[in-house]
Image (cartoon, rainbow, N blue to C red; front, side, top):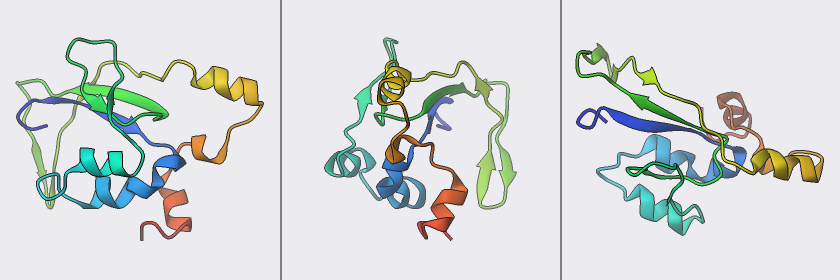
Length: 125
């Protein structure tokens, strides 16, 4: 991100819970996240209608393309740097609402995954 200055934040659903340790607790330099997600049944795909669409996790609740303009600097926040990014648009996968309407209710795996749920399940501390 620091080099490219753009990316896509992905709002995960509960179905993505098996990926939390891989995505949130491991460095991309030490783990092949794309390969390990695929092995876990979450093959990354080009989901956005752009020429340079990055590979993303399927079935996220939303995708947030962000950019970090060249005139801004990263702020040191101790263990992490902070970047105040521009949010370009919020994208939701076509068909999700139609599937939920057809079923009449959301399935457990379709619910947005919040930190509080991860704590109650013992996935994070």
